[in-house]
Image (cartoon, rainbow, N blue to C red):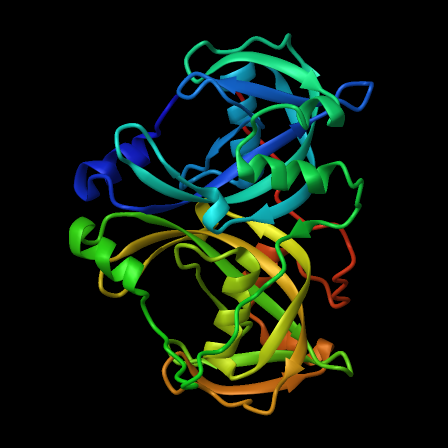
Length: 339
């Protein structure tokens, strides 16, 4: 399926405009440790298998579906290898459509089936060693992901943040220019947005929470990504804009999506979110203060107290426990998709 019904509907209203597209990439290895690559029909280049996420599917379900559609195999996502985005993941297709992918990379185990390219998106499938892959004309984003994959690092990888607060110190909040422009064209139609959230720890292990202006509840800082941002840049920006605290992401706690992340807002706007949750350490909290727009109050709480303040819905979404371990493997909802 080259384009989903969801994206086809968006394109009918926005034309070739740039779209932020949550996506998955799958890393499958054979018994010799070689990595599966796919030759794409549109440009005859090799890349890792992958594709966009539909609004009502979890990232793991998208990975299973994409491998089935492109390669004819059943697979199990075993762990998240990384989250990526930004300029390297920007593509302009031959028809002029522009996208920037926000990518969740899964290590997947092939359980059954025989590899067979679908001959629609993919013309050939083959396993490559690291030295063999280095000889290919791979897209820059594939080179970045493979470099992390071949390091054999157990931690979930992400591009380090380079974002810094603006010189004028102005903390913008609310709807982004990107979303505002889309809403002018699509109205209240469903919009799937890559989003970030942060569990921010101070030196004593206390957790930073914000009291939200829309419902007066305590929450972790969260927000949507902007085009051109990496996930880590987005989380640093969002925390600073909402709380005045500058942070450094130190780990990926989880990636979540699917039906439970759909919302209809008071103005009728329909959204679905793909959430990437980061653990962050405080770099500078001398500016700690609510922004007066999205945050009414910001405060540090001991972990147990923070857990009690967070909504049960938030806890259920992220699978949080009273012990917040940023060194653990990134969590995700197991796949349930069936052909």
